[in-house]
Length: 254
Image 1 (cartoon, rainbow, N blue to C red):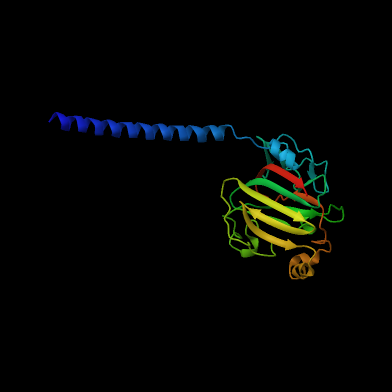
Image 2 (tube, rainbow, N blue to C red):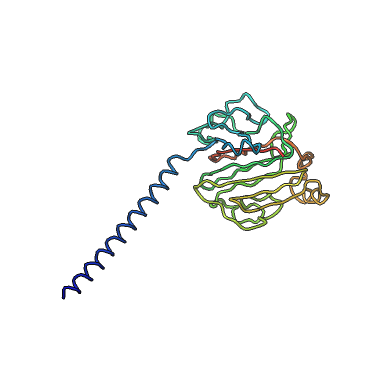
């Protein structure tokens, strides 16, 4: 009888110990995740990134290095709020337009995080040629598509997020994360471009390939003489009547 009681006591002690240990591990895991979220930093470069040649395109505080297309002095819809680059779609007194870099780029790798409001539409234009005679950035610069999953065009193959807008469906299927931050990466070397969404390759195109001219001719972009001709230019963030947010905008020239 004494032996049975001893064994039972040992089993109960072991069960309680395991339960407490699991609870302790769970608490530690939660604390670690919570601390990581509380201490995450944005719009900063790690030392290793600096050594690799990365530069910040957005400092998290100002619009330094950016201006409104063809209207650098305007009181634009673009603002900085809580360390995020935000397009204010709620104030009609502000000047609408695309925000583009002061500096043009040729060979580079660009990364950024983006988030968009429900049913929203936006994009990243590359190789933009700023010209007073050309009214908008999209009339020269091909677009990395940004689109919310509730937008009516979301399931159109050539308009999916991460696509080379209108020209090709996603090279590999991937979903955007509604209401959350998504990661875009664009790499261009000698006119050959790669698009990535959340780490997945979604688009490839060689702007020097004669086939590219044929692709343009088959779309409405054929009406714009300068569209898609350049393999260097400014980078622009599209404003299209919906709120969008950007952060951690980094570039490395190659």
